[in-house]
Length: 139
Image (cartoon, helix red, strand yellow):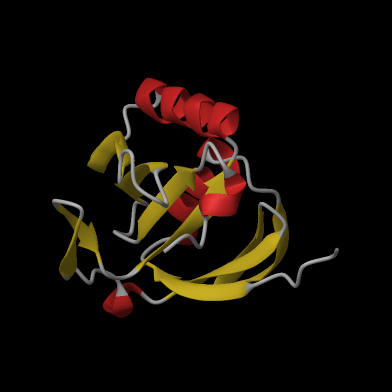
């Protein structure tokens, strides 16, 4: 079954930083761009970094399984081996984690590997993985 792709637009303070982070570190191929925006192939989905420095930084959090999760965040669900490889890549790049790589909801429905980190503009990203993909929407 083919799934629809999502599209997400978000503010950044500097397009060169966004290109280095999303294109370089995360390995997202660059798509179209203009003087004030650039889009990336984010694991098959389209994300667009818009130059809007006045819009960056929304530090609100919400409690989830004992952690303060950034309310505004986006990310991707990887396989466990892909997630573990990304942890190593981010650690090697000395990325500071907002929430360290960990297993959330251990032993419960929806158990998942998760980590949160910020892009250079302060946008929060969550990368997660499930040992059992059927648990993505488990209640």
